[in-house]
Every structure is written in structure tokens, then in C-alpha cells.
Length: 75
Image 1 (cartoon, helix red, strand yellow):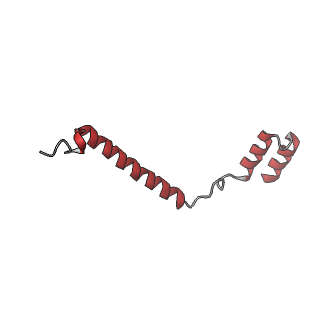
Image 2: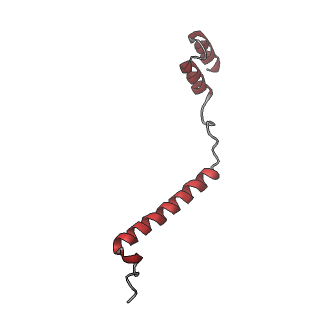
Image 3: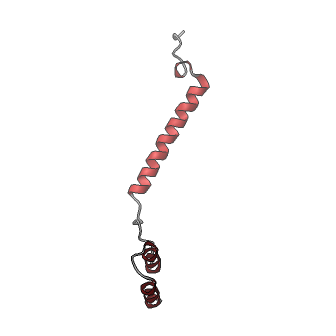
């Protein structure tokens, strides 16, 4: 007899499930971290000029006439 310290200290299948979920979580966090560290995309790089113009207009940085003029210049 092992004094009650066999198979996950008496937790049985529940202990094995918790350990499996723990290690799956660790692996997922490692993969997520590595994909973000070695990502080739730069944040905000996919915005085009017209989208930036729309955002500036929505924030109130430019007036409607400036927005229309700039949009026509881009096209």
C-alpha cells in the first residue's frame, strides 16, 4: 500500500483531467506567445489611406469639406 498517495494523491480521474487541462493550457499559452512574438504583421499596417481618412473624420479631426476633398484626391 502506498498510504493513499497513488494516482494523483487520491483524486483519481478528476485529478488526471485537471492535470491534462493544465498542460493543454500551458501548451496553448506557449503557442499563442510564440505566434505573437514572431508575427510578421505590424499592427495597423493593413489600414489603407481611405480608412485612416474615415477614422480621422469620425474623430472630428477634419471637417466634412476636408474629408470630401481628401477622398477625391485619393481616388
